[in-house]
Image (cartoon, rainbow over all chains, first blue to last red; front, side):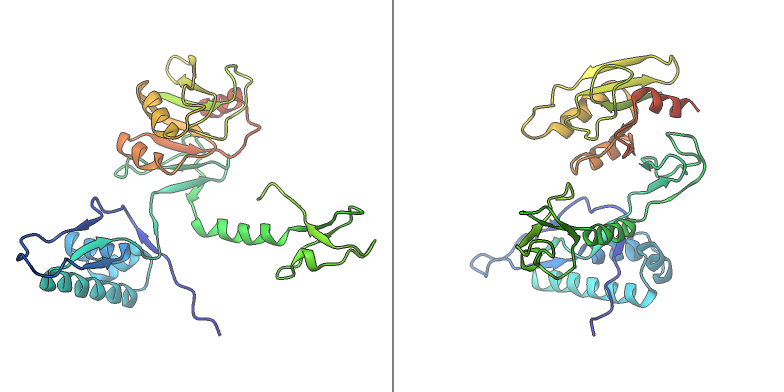
Length: 191
Length: 105
């Protein structure tokens, strides 16, 4: 059984720095070691300790459950404490995240647009002035991608016969039902 | 307010260009005077850095919105700091006239 799919954490903005370096280390000691702080852990610290939100509010912003947020947060505190006590440098990178850039999809004209003024709420589509718009879903594309992959076609090079591609079945191992020669993947513009 | 639209040639009947940094022309539309100005894009054949250079070009015209088919990865943060709105319209058959009519509605 495969494990439960990982939920992507939502990050409002990337950090202004990519890490922190310790200074004033005694000469002759070991070279500075680094510790990797995930972007999701950075965001948890930012929400809980900088914005002073409680864990429930922070978890709603990051689009994860409250226990998950608490786990991310305690891991972040642990890493920062380790860096502080052992004099390690902090590198902020990685983590399964996506950026919340305030993208919207208009249902009337089909365009996507963002909101550069975070304080002001968008009332109408900037292109067609329609009011029927919703938040852009990053997951929707993934479903479309899977559908697109399933619509691949196998092609016979000698007689031109085409049949729908079976997932997990290499085209070059398929035999053309018309003339019996080997088939190839048909080149589509998706590639 | 000025709006930049990426297009493939310098006429009103030209189609929307699906790229931002390497589009052929920018149509700068002024919503108040309803005038259109076509700017040829000097970064069309650029090896790299076409996106940021194009942002600089349109930002110098005080554009507040940009309509294009796609925006590159370097552009997002740049436009955020300049407070320019991005509008992604994945309909390459749309002409400039049609887009302007949509804006005027």
